[in-house]
Amino acid sequence: MPELPEVETIVRELRQPLVGRTFTQVIVRWEKTIQTPVAEFKHNLPGKQIESIRRRAKYIWFHLSGGWSLFIHLKMSGNLQVLPVSTPCEKHVHTILRLDNGHEVRFKDTRKFGRAYLTRDPETVTGHLGPEPLADNFTLADFKALFHRKKGRLKPLLLNQAFIAGLGNIYADEACHDAGILPNRTADTLSAVELERLYHSIRKVLNHGIMHRGATFDEVYPGGKFQNFFQVYGRTGEPCRTCDQPVERIVLSSRSTHFCPNCQR
Ligand SMILES: [Zn+2]
Image (cartoon, rainbow, N blue to C red; front, side):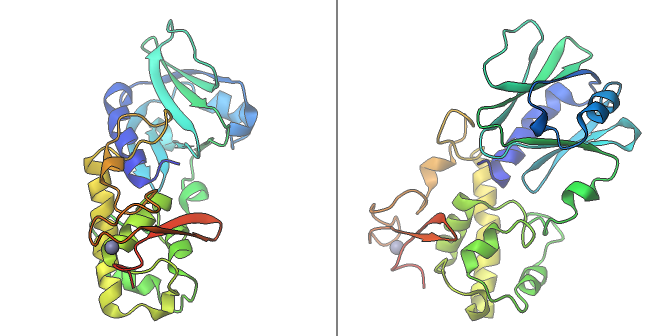
């Protein structure tokens, strides 16, 4: 699933072809994708101009004219294509958003878990989300405050979008390794020094991911290079790049979790 760096990269690439364009028509072939009543979605999107595009957590957020917001969450296999209307449509394109310049946005989604929302109240989509780890105003004190009275295991906490936004399996594992902290530690055992390391490591691995345009491991999200810099993720049995001990894998909250038993305490 695309995480913060992948979605950030996608957002940056969508701005040039899309900002300033106006939607003209909506074609929905798989209604479950559309979380707004489909008739309203089809009625309200045409005529709206894209004023800006930004990211919130793993959502792509189109700010539209008239105070409207279009949110797209790519989930497991979603992919947005901006192509001329005349280009033959690939399989698994379930939603098409026509534009005023002969192009269209195609939401291709093999596994159909992707979601789209059209609303004038963005809080209905983003209200449950935790803070953005890369925001300028997200301080170490803010990060430490998140852990107040938290007792759960660290990795599931980092994956919880209501706790902190944007991290997924890859960047949570990489951040724990960078900070030298075992992902199965319980949150209330982390010292102030460890929390400070983790705060900086989360921001470091996310920025590193963005710098390399995210990570690519299948055809869904092409072009990223961060997979070449993984320290532990997906490297079970391979030597830790820091200490040469084999990387280990455990399952935490039914998610694969990779760590170095020597570097991480
Ligand atoms: Zn190691």
